[in-house]
Amino acid sequence: MALGELLKIVTPPDKPKEVPTKPNWAAVEKKLGLQLPDDYKRYVTKFGTGVLGSFLRVYNPFSKREYTSLQKSVVSVCEIHQMRSDTFPYEFYPESPGLLPWGNDDNGNNLFWLTRGARNKWPIVVCSGRDDRSQLFEMGMTAFLARTFTGEVKCKIWPKPFAVKSRRFQFQPN
Image (cartoon, one colour):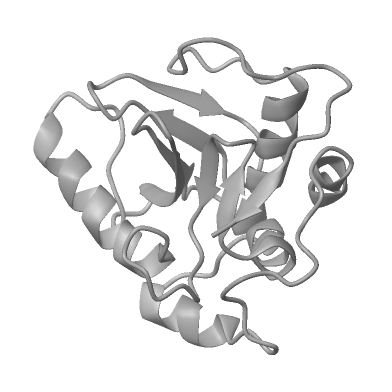
């Protein structure tokens, strides 16, 4: 279980921010017109809104804030990327398969699912916020996050590795 991998290196908050007692995932998915991966739903329920390792942010569909809301970010991030280049190798949501944003980093890069195949097997694509570079990772979201912080994932878009072996990373609720 990939969330278990992540929990070994990042401690979630005692009280996740912006997570209702009974999250209405059906309403979120109906609004988006697709089902979200199970590991994402477990992540949001466990962590809520915040920043992982002072670097990565996962959008929360229950957040009311523009910068952290999944639904608001899906619209704004897809609009920005669609305007950038006709040579980009992927389509964007709502196209299927397409890139559906689920997070970003402090350098202005975006994290997407490539919505091809079964939702629990959607690969991850990191897209540069400054040019048309992208990198595909054939793993789910929580595996990607865990392996990023253990140093197994090497993202060519990020300036340098920030993973440190045998270190617990902080989650900062916000």
